[in-house]
Amino acid sequence: MSAFIKYVLILLLFDIVKSVLSFRCDRRPYGSTTTSSPADGRFKLQIVGGYDSYMPEQLYSVQITETDGQSRFTGFMVSAEGDLKQDPRNPRRMIQQYPGEIRPQNPSTAKFSDRCLYSVEQAVNSFKSTVEVYWQAPSSGNGCVTLRAMVAENENMWFEDGGPLTLKVCEDMRQPDDVTPQLNYECQICDEAKYEISFTGIWSRNTHPRYFPENDWVPRYSDLVGASHTGDLIIWAPGTEATEGLQQLAEHANSSKLETEILEKVGDGIRTLIKGKGHGNLKMNIPTYAFFRANKDHHLVSVAIGFSPSPDWFLGVARFELCQQDNTWLQERELNLFPWDAGTDSGVTYESPNIQTFPKDAVTRVQTSSYDKNSPFFEMDMKDLHPFGRLGLKLIRTYHRECEETTESEEGETTEKAEKEEVPDESGEPEEPSRYQYPELASSDNGGSLGPDPESSDDCPMTPWQDWSNCEGICEDGKIVGIKWRERYHLVDGIPVGKYDPNAKHLPKKEVSKYCEETFEHFEELPCKEDCSETKEENDEITAEQRFMAPVIPGHTWSKKRALIKTVNKN
Ligand SMILES: *[C@@H]1O[C@H](CO)[C@@H](O)[C@H](O)[C@H]1NC(C)=O
Image 1 (cartoon, rainbow, N blue to C red):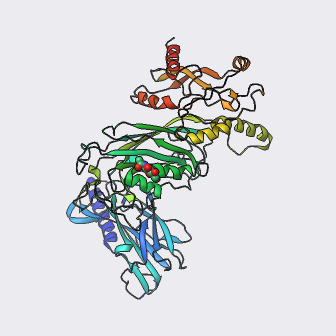
Image 2 (image 1 turned 180 degrees about the vertical axis):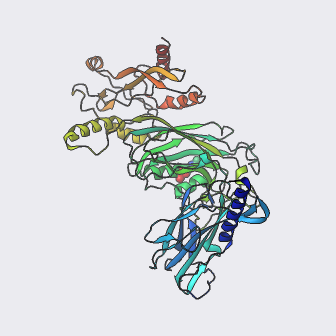
Image 3 (image 1 turned 60 degrees about the vertical axis):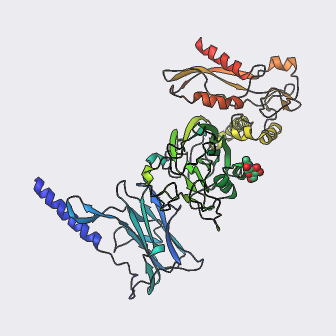
């Protein structure tokens, strides 16, 4: 085909597409003879999750719902319309950009429209209070998309367009690494995972000059607080109302209430409370670290970090999926954090006086292209906005776990094995912040699951072995050749002797009998080999934090043990 004919064909195609698109399709309910009535606010169109911008190619649920608790509709249509732009081949002509795809969510309630492009309509005329359809956003560079709804109470009473039935959403210009993966409701990974989470502050006078607080000693971050949790649990989420804990964190950078709310659900939807130290006073760019565990049931992570001064703004991720679609644990991810608005204070700038929002609004993004001159984000384009912090997630290791389903012949054996592995796991793992931060939890553990290992002798009761440490050593050529170690403790009168407790002021003096001491090891080490990365500047920072958490070999100080390990490696 000659280039000329191709060109003509393309032009023709554009003409056809254009004529189809510019035809404003008739969305009148079937059989209706009336024109539409002005929207009266009883029905509204929204994107589930409260998004007001879209991530390219992301799947969204779009919902028509009544707003007064009683109105019902029979017919509907949801359409997507792209922005017009100049045809690059013919500047005198406007063409419509691709608006993405609207699809039925449930074929028994919705179907593709025969009349209109990029539209879905009712499959049956039953009365409904709400309906949801999918919208797959277009790829990057397609500008803004207008979502429109037609809602019919009956064939003669119907509404289209207007405020509550039209939504214009533009591409969210944040980097794709800020997009959180889709939820994997059927996580099938049996092995448990241990993650490191890090938060690095970026908010400063250099990155965010407009209205940055005058006094450099004032700005600070709250502690980082969050949890690994199940799919049905919400610690915070866009589009939902902030809990009192989130409100305190967002308004006053005080995390204690949110921690309490999370602690109340440990064991009931929550696997690990995550807590990392918040920095202020000119140290806001120093990273903070914490560790947490995730498993088949608790495969989401949510965290929040308040920053002060601010009306009710905070940073964080909500319901971030760690269990990937191919049923492997996410290895590593960096996320840029942009401020969220908790919906509880109507101030517009960092140092606004408190203006309580009543009733509370839902959690949404802080409006970045604000037209309010007092806003730090006055007329700012999202793509020019620096993140306020960066969150890192890194898989540290996994723990082998048997899946619950077992064949009958193996059942006895597998259950027993699973139990044995569970015991050390629950035995107050020292590096988990929940136990480190909460001595009361740790001590109840000592009385409970840190009881004697049923396998240890009655004469010399001991706790179960704790988990193996990471492979420790010097990283060379991407490999650590070092040692890993684990410990257990002699129990005297039910007290684990020599167990390091950073909160205990007076360690109870308990003597282990010579016989027990000599007969039963409390410390084991093994050579190990592991991949590692050498470019880990933050290494010192992590170990500094772990110093408090790592158990100390009785009779050694922590630093001695460290030195010992290094010497071993050099030989
Ligand atoms: C944080 O809030 C709690 C009440 O939720 C209060 O007891 C505590 O004093 C507050 N901490 C600070 C530093 O203001």
